[in-house]
Image (cartoon, rainbow, N blue to C red; front, side, top):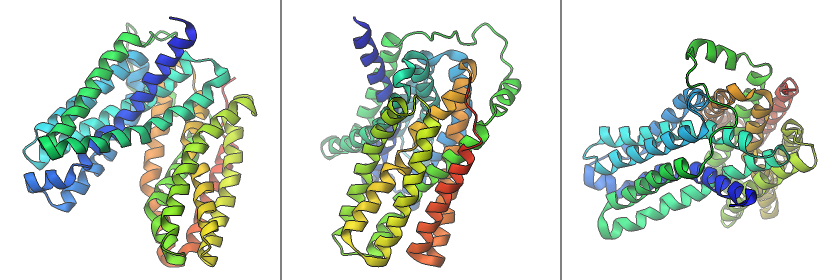
Length: 392
């Protein structure tokens, strides 16, 4: 097998790893109405499944990164996929809320390991010339996994709600085996055989110069993404015609996909691999997108609604790959997994806190206040990035 083909197989598997998280959660949530009817769950309990997943994902991000540094990327990804498969098997077998929630939480733990391990894989296994591009492209596995997970619900009509979840569990188990079979050993030897000092390791990761500031910027942009997902439908319907809702949301998702491709390529081709430089321009354009959102709310023009959705998807919703690439530029190889886990922890916390803050602003000041808050978050992230370092 030639090198190009090997690289293609490896990247395809990394992309598949990212698909696992969304696939596992959506395979359960899409079957939610049937599960609720069969197990007698309330709407609050069904909604809590997503909360269990998100909480486990956030809790596992930093420990998962340390695990990937310790075990090596291949073993960490195989372990993560096995955790997802086990969680889905528990969920499919559940006859009550507690085991169902526990299975979903285990899937979140598995994805908490995948995030840092996949970022570590791209950094160690691929040429720096295309590294940021690949960091961004691997994130497109998330919507792909969501689509697969949603599609598994079709099996429920014929074989019951468990069938789709069992199918997703089988996919996760097969991927675990494929990771072992086709992914390489790390070029940088992991820490096996060396005494593991978790407190010292954690201090070393948290003390990396500039990483804390860069991670706060990542939390702001990810929080902005979650706020857009939560509030954009309401914002559009406040000031535009009914069909503008589909137009604006379609533009948001199209912009997200286009931005994840564009900004990764731009970082590598235009900015010499400097993801921070690309992120600065992304945030400048995001401020313009927030201004367009304000104009759309004030004027109610469908063209502005679509423009705002596209610009905000193209920037705020497309930033995560660049943030991981910034982390990879700061952290040495032996702390890379832990550093990316730290990034994902703060990123997920931003997804919890920023929507609450922007929701309060929206309730008090309307569309204009929300747009101004979104622009302020982008400008604050821009300032934080100015103080983030880059590994020599």
